[in-house]
Image 1 (cartoon, helix red, strand yellow):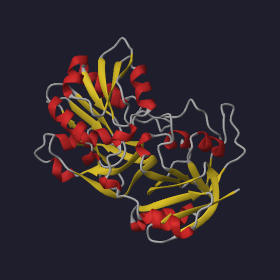
Image 2: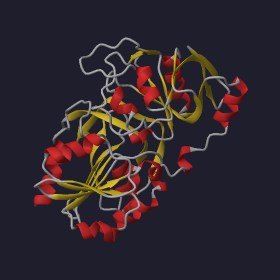
Image 3: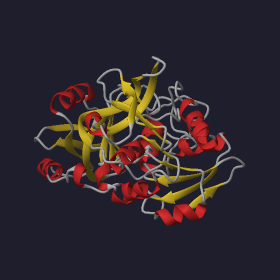
Length: 358
C-alpha cells in the first residue's frame, strides 16, 4: 500500500492509503453526497479543477463498468474516499476502484475521515487541496495546496471541450450542442428522442452554428466559473432571439450571463443525487441530480426577460429559467438521469421538443 497525503490550504494534513496512480495534484476540494453513481460522477467533465470527495463511507462496491462513464477520463484531479471497495460484486463490473483509477492515470486516497472533512467544508466553504500518492514530503504537499490557483480565475472549459465538431445522426429535429464539457448521458437522451445532433467546440462561432441550420442550440454542463467562458457567452448573445436556446447546469448560467444577469460562487455548492427542486407552475417537488459550485443571482435576473420557474427547496437558489417569447429554457440540475434519480428524465427534453416544434 502506497503512502498518501491530503493537505489543505489552511495547513491541515491527513495521512491515508494511496489508490490509483502515483502523483501530486491539486484543486478545490468538493464533496458529493450520492450513495451510488460514482462511475458517472468521477468521469463527469464538470469536476475538472477539483478534488472530488465522496461522503458515502464505502465507494466502489459494485465495481466499474466502462459503459457507464461520461467521458474518456476522470474529470476530477484526484478522488478522496473513506474506504474503497477492493472486492466489488456486480455482473457488469470490469475493474475495482483502484484498477479504474490506475487505468485513468488518476491518484486517489482512502482512509480519510470524510465526515469531518465534509463538516469542515460546510462550515468554512470549499478549500484548496493537494493529494500526493507516493514518495512526497508533507511540507511539499502543504505548499502545493496553498499555491493552487483560485478556481474562479481559471478557464476550465477549454480543457474539456471537444477539439472538432462531430455528428450523431437522427431523424428528428436538428439540434446543435455547444460542448462546454458535455456528459455522454445528455447526448444519449437526445438520441433517444431521435434528435439529429451536431456537437460543437465551446469556442465555435455563431456563423459556424448557422451553417448547420439547427432548430435549436443546447449549451451543455461544464466546469468552473461561467464568467471565464467568454466564447460561449458571446455565442449565446449572438443567437438569442434567432434560435431557441436551451441550457443544462453550467449552460443555464452561460445563458443568464449572455442576457445580462450575474452569477456567484456558492459556499460549498450542490453535488449529489438528492436535491429537491420545486416547480412553481405545478407545485411539484422533483428530486434531482446536481453538480455545480456557481449559481445564478436571482435578483440580477430583473430586466433580463428571464423568469425563474423552479427553485431549490432547500436554499431557494435558481433551478430553472425561461423566456417564452425568445424560446429560452434552462435548468440548473442534470435532467438526463444518469445514474438517477429519474424524476426529471423526460420533463426537460419534452419541453425542448415542445418549443422547437411550436
